[in-house]
Length: 233
Image 1 (tube, helix red, strand yellow):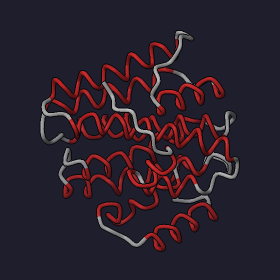
Image 2: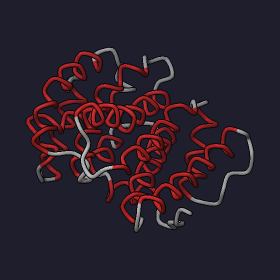
Image 3: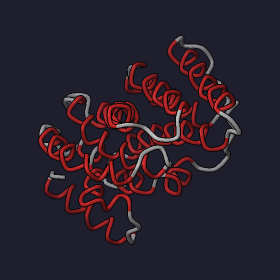
Image 4: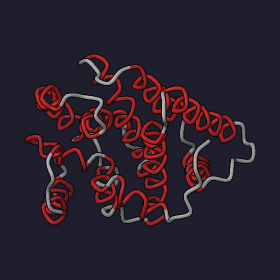
């Protein structure tokens, strides 16, 4: 049910997910960078399934299409001819990525279909399932020896930002919860090495509610450069 997108995935992510795309520019290995981009493109497709659907049932059908794609991927079958599905399957094979975080991202999107705004408990669970799962998988791609679970809090921070941007979470509520989550994210991120840090670097852009406001690309680049250089969020 997903629409084929013939465009280059790197360009798709650059336009749809500019902050995480900027963080991938600090990944030196081009193959690993492309695999992380494929992961973010998958996340974009899941978010898009909700945005373009005319009703929740259609959105769930689209998300089920992606779940079936995971069935093919993990069964070793021929993966459907969609550029994101193909790229994600290749990344999964190269890095032996587990299914559970990918499944969690789909489940979280389905949970978000039930109501216009999430409460605190729902938002924190969804943010960790979306942004946290993506960050965990990105660490597995970048450094298989790094503690991938240390990326979940930082990914969850960015997950809150994305939920606000998508109209699923009240901005004022998210702003109140972010400082506490950032403390946890900073602590855990210190356990990640240099190679894995770009998986969480974008979380620094959530500081002070900056993720909710428009900022110049140059300012974002400088903040990311500072985070990567110091290894801190």
